[in-house]
Image (cartoon, rainbow, N blue to C red):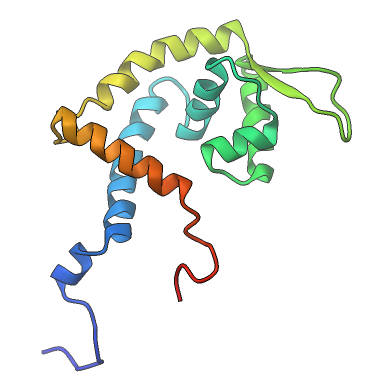
Length: 157
C-alpha cells in the first residue's frame, strides 16, 4: 500500500508526460544509432559533425557545437579526434579571435557515404513503428520543439 504523499504519480501519469516520453524514446533511438555508428568507428556526435559539414555549409567549432547540441568546450575534443583520424581539417589561418572553419576531408566524405545509407534505413518510419505520415508529423513536431527555448524564464516553475 502506498503512503499518501499528496499527488504522487501513477503509471498512467508518467505515460502522459510528453517530455518524459520524449526522453525515453530519445534514449531508445540513441542506443540504436550508437550501435549503428560504432560499426563505423563513430559516435552519434561525430556522425553529426560529419553530416553537418557534408552539407557544404561552413561551420566554426562553436557553430558545430550548437548544431549537434553539445557544449562548445566538448566540441574541441570531438574535432581533434576527427582531425587526428584524417576525417576533418581546419581551414584558414586560425589563432585567437580569428574565424577558423572546419572542413570534411575526402576520407571523411567517404566514411559518411558508407554510413549514410544505413542511417537512412534506420530512420525508415516502418522500422520506427510509424506510418510515413506519422514519421513526417513526428519529425515536424520534434523540429518545432528544438526551435522552442524550453529553458526560458517562466517556461517551468
